[in-house]
Length: 298
Length: 306
Image 1 (cartoon, rainbow over the protein chains, first blue to last red):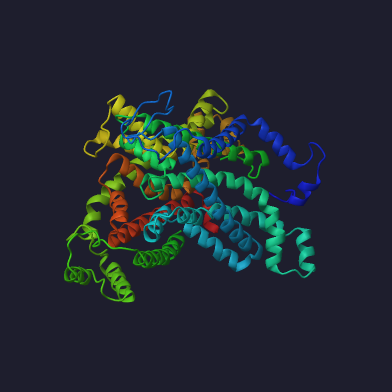
Image 2: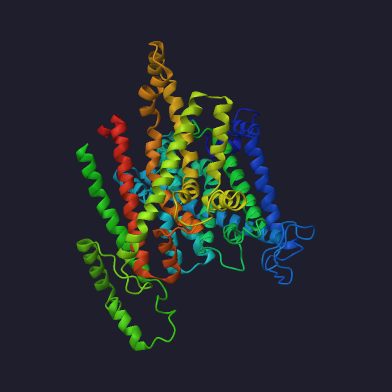
């Protein structure tokens, strides 16, 4: 599958138009309208979320009891919640939290998955069998339950949350990296590295991992939405981000409680969250298809 | 076949043992206990409670006692929050409800997912393919805690067709089962479509058609078994997802199932309850995975030689 994959060094060196696989991929990606729209949406939303921290006319935690819950108006575009807090500011702030947790947890899962997969794939043999068997077993457990237990036992700290989420979402990454490394390690440059007397550790870290980073980056875009989902899931159950902070999960939970009287408290966070997940999924799928890492979409 | 099943059962036992051990020691580290919140508790009372639950013994001893009772009697201990109730009793009342919900969600997902996927594969690149597959793509992106409240808002509050929560009448099952099954329905329909397309392009299908077999027979007799293999492989992860999904769906719809005990026990710091529910979930998932594996080996003879 990946024998014809260009290495990172090739990618940097080749500038001839229309020939490199990465340029082909870029052209194909641009033709995929949904992926492009998704990418643009995520970019705009990210900028808006983090910009809102600086220039929002209403602070996200500023309560206004006299005002109470109001429907969307000129002053508050998405209305206000029961405590009179501006929903636009809260939704955008929730976006900051959700996106940050998504990125940080993805990073954790990528680091674990890449190292695990590279070691398993490169060393091979019995170690590989055992390591992959462990992945299979872990895969078949209800791991969200364990994330909840970890948060209960060690406290609901936001850093702990993305560590825990990252620690349970590296399995796919490990499998992909392992498959890539297994085909890479038969190539000549590895033979050369071995002939030079390099140690295994160095070959894995300096020769294997840099060569799979392209694919890793693409699959990472597919991990981000799944991780954001997990964060929202925990926050929704009340085990995630704590008040007065808000993530999209807590906003959805708050909105659900009062949807009969104030449906906008549910609808706007739902729309933001769903659109972001769509966009990230379309972008990730588009990237994967553009590089044709796996022959077909399932 | 029998050897394969036995081998898988033997593999599952140490996994469950490790899960039980890890959970036990993890929960032992849990800060605070269920007795912290009770007001006006004298030290003597607390001591008595701790003796009652065996918390005064060393950890190793507690662990051995727990495992002994668990393995010999299937006893999950006493709840520390619901005084006088054992975890077994509490779960015996609530677990069947969760299982019913999970089963209904799975049936919903399988029925509509297979239907949509197979029909789409037979109408490739027409509106009958694009429309259900676009809906499926949306279904994969939207989580149950968004669809659940939105379904309640639209169908229960605005249209008034269903009750917004509760678990009393057969009608009350529809919205929760749909919420729980939606994601899996979407996923299954995509898998079924992909698998069927692959099979329908094979030579033996062309032969069957050339022989004059009816379309119904081509699908039913020749394609389904091969085309749906990927769906069967997906059933294992799907069950795991439905178990965790039930945490959210039971919360949204106020269903008196086991998931509520698990979530509440997390807030109440009810150790035995957390331990018991975790174990029950782990056993459920491992057993269902085992069943899914057996079905996929049964459906795909190629796997039997591995």
